[in-house]
Length: 256
Ligand SMILES: NC(=O)c1ccc[n+]([C@@H]2O[C@H](COP(=O)([O-])OP(=O)(O)OC[C@H]3O[C@@H](n4cnc5c(N)ncnc54)[C@H](OP(=O)(O)O)[C@@H]3O)[C@@H](O)[C@H]2O)c1
Image (cartoon, rainbow, N blue to C red; front, side, top):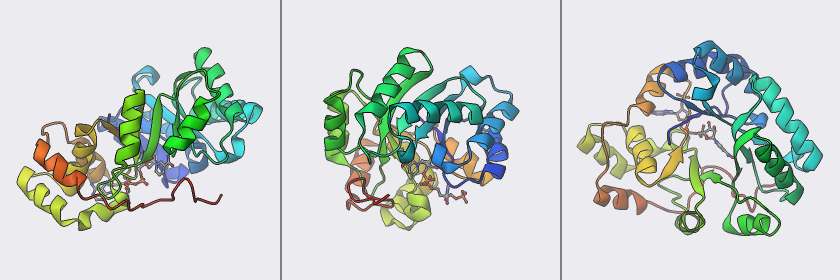
Protein backbone atom coordinates (compact mmCIF):
# COMPACT_ATOMS: atom_id res chain seq x y z
CA UNK A 1 0.00 0.00 0.00
CA UNK A 2 2.96 2.37 0.56
CA UNK A 3 5.63 2.49 -2.11
CA UNK A 4 8.51 4.74 -3.06
CA UNK A 5 8.29 6.96 -6.17
CA UNK A 6 11.38 7.69 -8.25
CA UNK A 7 10.27 10.17 -10.92
CA UNK A 8 12.94 12.86 -11.51
CA UNK A 9 15.56 11.05 -9.43
CA UNK A 10 18.62 11.08 -11.72
CA UNK A 11 20.08 7.69 -12.60
CA UNK A 12 23.37 8.43 -10.83
CA UNK A 13 21.54 9.32 -7.60
CA UNK A 14 18.86 6.61 -7.76
CA UNK A 15 20.99 3.75 -6.39
CA UNK A 16 21.79 5.59 -3.15
CA UNK A 17 18.27 6.96 -2.70
CA UNK A 18 16.53 3.63 -3.40
CA UNK A 19 18.93 1.79 -1.10
CA UNK A 20 18.14 4.31 1.67
CA UNK A 21 14.40 3.89 1.08
CA UNK A 22 14.65 0.10 1.35
CA UNK A 23 16.79 0.31 4.48
CA UNK A 24 14.17 2.75 5.83
CA UNK A 25 11.47 0.10 5.39
CA UNK A 26 9.98 0.52 1.91
CA UNK A 27 9.52 -2.70 -0.03
CA UNK A 28 7.63 -1.31 -3.03
CA UNK A 29 9.55 0.76 -5.59
CA UNK A 30 7.95 2.57 -8.54
CA UNK A 31 9.95 3.49 -11.63
CA UNK A 32 9.39 3.74 -15.41
CA UNK A 33 11.48 3.34 -18.52
CA UNK A 34 10.96 7.02 -19.32
CA UNK A 35 12.43 8.10 -15.95
CA UNK A 36 15.79 6.87 -17.29
CA UNK A 37 16.82 5.71 -13.84
CA UNK A 38 16.11 1.97 -14.01
CA UNK A 39 19.84 1.15 -13.86
CA UNK A 40 20.21 3.14 -10.64
CA UNK A 41 17.00 1.69 -9.19
CA UNK A 42 18.18 -1.86 -9.94
CA UNK A 43 21.56 -1.13 -8.36
CA UNK A 44 19.87 0.34 -5.27
CA UNK A 45 17.81 -2.82 -4.83
CA UNK A 46 20.94 -4.98 -5.15
CA UNK A 47 22.95 -2.75 -2.79
CA UNK A 48 20.21 -2.94 -0.13
CA UNK A 49 20.88 -6.68 0.24
CA UNK A 50 17.16 -7.26 0.64
CA UNK A 51 16.14 -10.33 -1.38
CA UNK A 52 14.57 -9.55 -4.74
CA UNK A 53 11.46 -11.60 -3.83
CA UNK A 54 10.88 -9.32 -0.83
CA UNK A 55 10.71 -6.26 -3.10
CA UNK A 56 7.61 -5.26 -5.10
CA UNK A 57 8.97 -3.58 -8.23
CA UNK A 58 6.86 -1.56 -10.67
CA UNK A 59 7.97 -0.22 -14.02
CA UNK A 60 6.10 1.09 -17.03
CA UNK A 61 5.98 0.72 -20.81
CA UNK A 62 6.49 4.12 -22.44
CA UNK A 63 4.29 5.45 -25.26
CA UNK A 64 6.92 4.98 -28.00
CA UNK A 65 7.16 1.30 -27.04
CA UNK A 66 3.48 0.55 -27.45
CA UNK A 67 2.67 -2.29 -29.86
CA UNK A 68 3.07 -6.04 -29.49
CA UNK A 69 6.72 -6.58 -30.47
CA UNK A 70 7.99 -3.25 -29.16
CA UNK A 71 6.32 -3.78 -25.77
CA UNK A 72 7.95 -7.21 -25.48
CA UNK A 73 11.33 -5.67 -26.32
CA UNK A 74 10.82 -2.74 -23.93
CA UNK A 75 9.98 -5.18 -21.16
CA UNK A 76 13.22 -7.12 -21.70
CA UNK A 77 15.26 -3.91 -21.75
CA UNK A 78 13.67 -2.74 -18.48
CA UNK A 79 14.44 -6.12 -16.90
CA UNK A 80 18.07 -5.88 -18.02
CA UNK A 81 18.49 -2.36 -16.65
CA UNK A 82 16.79 -3.34 -13.37
CA UNK A 83 18.90 -6.53 -13.07
CA UNK A 84 15.84 -8.75 -12.71
CA UNK A 85 14.12 -11.40 -14.77
CA UNK A 86 10.60 -10.53 -13.65
CA UNK A 87 8.57 -7.43 -12.77
CA UNK A 88 5.98 -7.37 -10.01
CA UNK A 89 3.77 -4.78 -11.68
CA UNK A 90 4.12 -3.64 -15.30
CA UNK A 91 1.95 -0.72 -16.43
CA UNK A 92 1.01 0.87 -19.73
CA UNK A 93 2.24 4.36 -18.82
CA UNK A 94 -0.35 6.41 -20.77
CA UNK A 95 -3.37 5.49 -22.87
CA UNK A 96 -2.01 7.50 -25.79
CA UNK A 97 -1.85 5.70 -28.07
CA UNK A 98 -4.41 3.19 -26.85
CA UNK A 99 -3.09 0.02 -28.43
CA UNK A 100 -4.71 -3.35 -27.81
CA UNK A 101 -1.66 -5.25 -29.09
CA UNK A 102 0.40 -3.75 -26.23
CA UNK A 103 -2.01 -5.38 -23.80
CA UNK A 104 -1.71 -8.70 -25.66
CA UNK A 105 2.05 -8.60 -24.98
CA UNK A 106 1.35 -7.82 -21.31
CA UNK A 107 -1.07 -10.75 -21.07
CA UNK A 108 1.46 -13.15 -22.56
CA UNK A 109 4.24 -12.00 -20.22
CA UNK A 110 1.82 -12.39 -17.32
CA UNK A 111 0.87 -15.90 -18.40
CA UNK A 112 4.57 -16.80 -18.70
CA UNK A 113 5.14 -15.60 -15.12
CA UNK A 114 7.48 -12.79 -16.19
CA UNK A 115 5.09 -10.19 -14.71
CA UNK A 116 3.21 -10.86 -11.50
CA UNK A 117 0.54 -8.19 -12.05
CA UNK A 118 -0.38 -6.21 -15.16
CA UNK A 119 -2.02 -2.84 -15.15
CA UNK A 120 -2.46 0.57 -16.69
CA UNK A 121 -1.75 4.15 -15.75
CA UNK A 122 -3.53 7.40 -16.51
CA UNK A 123 -6.59 5.59 -17.84
CA UNK A 124 -9.94 7.36 -17.64
CA UNK A 125 -12.98 5.09 -17.50
CA UNK A 126 -13.47 5.32 -21.28
CA UNK A 127 -9.85 4.21 -21.91
CA UNK A 128 -10.39 1.30 -19.56
CA UNK A 129 -13.63 0.26 -21.26
CA UNK A 130 -12.01 0.52 -24.68
CA UNK A 131 -9.14 -1.74 -23.62
CA UNK A 132 -11.58 -4.23 -22.11
CA UNK A 133 -13.23 -4.74 -25.51
CA UNK A 134 -10.25 -6.86 -26.61
CA UNK A 135 -8.58 -7.78 -23.30
CA UNK A 136 -8.65 -11.35 -22.02
CA UNK A 137 -7.24 -10.36 -18.62
CA UNK A 138 -8.60 -7.28 -16.87
CA UNK A 139 -5.96 -4.73 -15.78
CA UNK A 140 -5.30 -5.25 -12.07
CA UNK A 141 -4.19 -1.70 -11.24
CA UNK A 142 -4.78 1.83 -12.55
CA UNK A 143 -2.12 4.32 -11.42
CA UNK A 144 -3.56 7.82 -11.66
CA UNK A 145 -3.15 11.26 -10.17
CA UNK A 146 -5.05 11.38 -6.85
CA UNK A 147 -4.65 14.21 -4.36
CA UNK A 148 -6.88 16.17 -1.97
CA UNK A 149 -7.44 18.57 -4.92
CA UNK A 150 -8.19 15.74 -7.38
CA UNK A 151 -10.14 12.97 -5.66
CA UNK A 152 -11.37 11.37 -8.93
CA UNK A 153 -14.54 10.14 -7.25
CA UNK A 154 -16.36 8.77 -10.36
CA UNK A 155 -13.24 6.93 -11.59
CA UNK A 156 -12.47 5.65 -8.08
CA UNK A 157 -16.03 4.31 -7.73
CA UNK A 158 -15.79 2.68 -11.16
CA UNK A 159 -12.45 1.00 -10.37
CA UNK A 160 -13.82 -0.25 -7.05
CA UNK A 161 -16.85 -1.74 -8.83
CA UNK A 162 -14.51 -3.48 -11.30
CA UNK A 163 -12.23 -4.80 -8.53
CA UNK A 164 -9.24 -2.85 -9.90
CA UNK A 165 -6.70 -1.53 -7.39
CA UNK A 166 -6.15 2.22 -7.55
CA UNK A 167 -2.71 3.70 -7.08
CA UNK A 168 -2.00 7.41 -6.74
CA UNK A 169 0.83 9.39 -8.28
CA UNK A 170 2.09 12.82 -7.18
CA UNK A 171 0.24 12.25 -3.88
CA UNK A 172 2.00 15.25 -2.31
CA UNK A 173 1.17 17.46 -5.31
CA UNK A 174 4.95 17.70 -5.69
CA UNK A 175 5.12 19.63 -2.41
CA UNK A 176 2.05 21.89 -2.90
CA UNK A 177 -0.11 20.12 -0.28
CA UNK A 178 1.68 22.09 2.43
CA UNK A 179 -0.28 25.20 1.35
CA UNK A 180 -3.72 23.73 2.24
CA UNK A 181 -5.14 25.12 5.50
CA UNK A 182 -7.28 22.12 6.51
CA UNK A 183 -4.28 19.81 6.16
CA UNK A 184 -2.23 22.11 8.40
CA UNK A 185 -5.01 21.91 11.04
CA UNK A 186 -5.12 18.11 10.78
CA UNK A 187 -1.34 18.05 11.06
CA UNK A 188 -1.61 19.87 14.43
CA UNK A 189 -4.55 17.68 15.55
CA UNK A 190 -2.79 14.35 14.88
CA UNK A 191 0.77 15.48 15.65
CA UNK A 192 1.82 14.38 12.16
CA UNK A 193 3.18 16.35 9.20
CA UNK A 194 0.95 17.42 6.31
CA UNK A 195 2.66 14.83 4.09
CA UNK A 196 1.94 12.10 6.63
CA UNK A 197 -1.74 13.15 6.83
CA UNK A 198 -2.07 12.90 3.05
CA UNK A 199 -0.25 9.57 2.80
CA UNK A 200 -2.52 8.21 5.57
CA UNK A 201 -5.60 9.57 3.74
CA UNK A 202 -4.55 7.59 0.66
CA UNK A 203 -4.26 4.35 2.62
CA UNK A 204 -7.42 5.02 4.63
CA UNK A 205 -9.29 5.48 1.34
CA UNK A 206 -7.86 2.18 -0.05
CA UNK A 207 -5.48 3.83 -2.49
CA UNK A 208 -1.90 2.59 -2.94
CA UNK A 209 0.46 5.54 -2.55
CA UNK A 210 4.02 6.13 -3.81
CA UNK A 211 5.49 9.42 -2.50
CA UNK A 212 8.91 10.40 -3.82
CA UNK A 213 11.73 12.09 -1.95
CA UNK A 214 15.49 12.29 -2.29
CA UNK A 215 15.77 13.70 1.25
CA UNK A 216 16.63 11.09 3.88
CA UNK A 217 14.56 12.71 6.63
CA UNK A 218 11.49 12.92 4.34
CA UNK A 219 12.00 9.35 3.11
CA UNK A 220 11.69 8.27 6.75
CA UNK A 221 8.88 10.73 7.53
CA UNK A 222 6.76 9.48 4.62
CA UNK A 223 7.06 5.90 5.87
CA UNK A 224 6.20 6.74 9.48
CA UNK A 225 2.42 6.59 9.04
CA UNK A 226 1.51 3.22 10.52
CA UNK A 227 0.85 4.42 14.08
CA UNK A 228 -2.34 6.40 13.41
CA UNK A 229 -5.61 6.48 11.41
CA UNK A 230 -7.76 9.40 10.33
CA UNK A 231 -11.30 9.59 11.66
CA UNK A 232 -14.11 9.10 9.12
CA UNK A 233 -15.09 12.77 9.56
CA UNK A 234 -11.55 13.92 8.77
CA UNK A 235 -11.38 11.63 5.71
CA UNK A 236 -14.65 13.18 4.47
CA UNK A 237 -13.29 16.69 5.14
CA UNK A 238 -10.21 15.95 3.01
CA UNK A 239 -12.44 14.50 0.28
CA UNK A 240 -14.28 17.83 0.19
CA UNK A 241 -11.05 19.67 -0.72
CA UNK A 242 -11.50 18.36 -4.27
CA UNK A 243 -11.34 21.04 -6.96
CA UNK A 244 -10.67 18.71 -9.94
CA UNK A 245 -7.29 20.43 -10.06
CA UNK A 246 -4.46 18.54 -11.74
CA UNK A 247 -0.78 18.82 -10.90
CA UNK A 248 0.08 16.83 -14.03
CA UNK A 249 -1.50 16.47 -17.46
CA UNK A 250 -5.01 15.25 -18.23
CA UNK A 251 -4.69 11.94 -20.10
CA UNK A 252 -7.27 13.16 -22.64
CA UNK A 253 -5.41 16.36 -23.51
CA UNK A 254 -1.76 15.56 -22.98
CA UNK A 255 -0.03 15.97 -26.34
CA UNK A 256 2.95 13.68 -26.65
N1 LIG B 1 2.14 7.11 -13.81
C1 LIG B 1 2.47 8.35 -14.00
O1 LIG B 1 2.19 8.95 -15.05
C2 LIG B 1 3.18 9.10 -12.93
C3 LIG B 1 3.27 10.49 -12.98
C4 LIG B 1 3.94 11.15 -11.96
C5 LIG B 1 4.49 10.43 -10.93
N2 LIG B 1 4.41 9.06 -10.90
C6 LIG B 1 5.00 8.27 -9.78
O2 LIG B 1 4.52 8.80 -8.56
C7 LIG B 1 5.62 9.15 -7.74
C8 LIG B 1 5.28 10.31 -6.83
O3 LIG B 1 4.93 11.46 -7.58
P1 LIG B 1 5.90 12.73 -7.77
O4 LIG B 1 7.30 12.33 -7.62
O5 LIG B 1 5.49 13.37 -9.04
O6 LIG B 1 5.45 13.73 -6.62
P2 LIG B 1 5.16 13.69 -5.05
O7 LIG B 1 5.56 12.39 -4.45
O8 LIG B 1 3.76 14.17 -4.89
O9 LIG B 1 6.08 14.85 -4.52
C9 LIG B 1 7.47 14.79 -4.57
C10 LIG B 1 7.98 16.17 -4.11
O10 LIG B 1 7.57 16.41 -2.77
C11 LIG B 1 8.71 16.61 -1.95
N3 LIG B 1 8.48 15.89 -0.69
C12 LIG B 1 8.56 14.56 -0.47
N4 LIG B 1 8.27 14.26 0.79
C13 LIG B 1 7.99 15.43 1.41
C14 LIG B 1 7.64 15.77 2.74
N5 LIG B 1 7.50 14.83 3.68
N6 LIG B 1 7.44 17.07 3.03
C15 LIG B 1 7.57 18.01 2.09
N7 LIG B 1 7.90 17.75 0.80
C16 LIG B 1 8.12 16.47 0.46
C17 LIG B 1 9.88 16.04 -2.71
O11 LIG B 1 11.07 16.74 -2.42
P3 LIG B 1 12.51 16.07 -2.23
O12 LIG B 1 12.61 14.94 -3.20
O13 LIG B 1 13.43 17.20 -2.55
O14 LIG B 1 12.61 15.62 -0.81
C18 LIG B 1 9.47 16.29 -4.16
O15 LIG B 1 9.77 17.60 -4.55
C19 LIG B 1 6.71 9.47 -8.77
O16 LIG B 1 7.98 9.59 -8.19
C20 LIG B 1 6.52 8.35 -9.73
O17 LIG B 1 7.11 7.15 -9.24
C21 LIG B 1 3.75 8.40 -11.89
